[in-house]
Length: 86
Image (tube, rainbow, N blue to C red; front, side, top):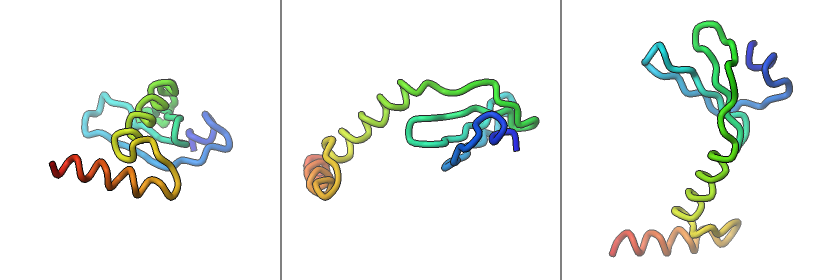
């Protein structure tokens, strides 16, 4: 598999294919790492921006849980839910 050649030991968690034949397929290998593959040949032209993925993960955590973690996430989710209801 071309992914194993490009990233030995990678543990893919998500594959996104697009109907546009000019777009590369994207494979998420961990929360902050993305690899793009040619959907026809499997060649890996490059990886995505890890800085951007980290930034978007932080923004998602703030948006959903007020950046709380673990057991406190339910509190953050309740607070954001209440404000959405208002």
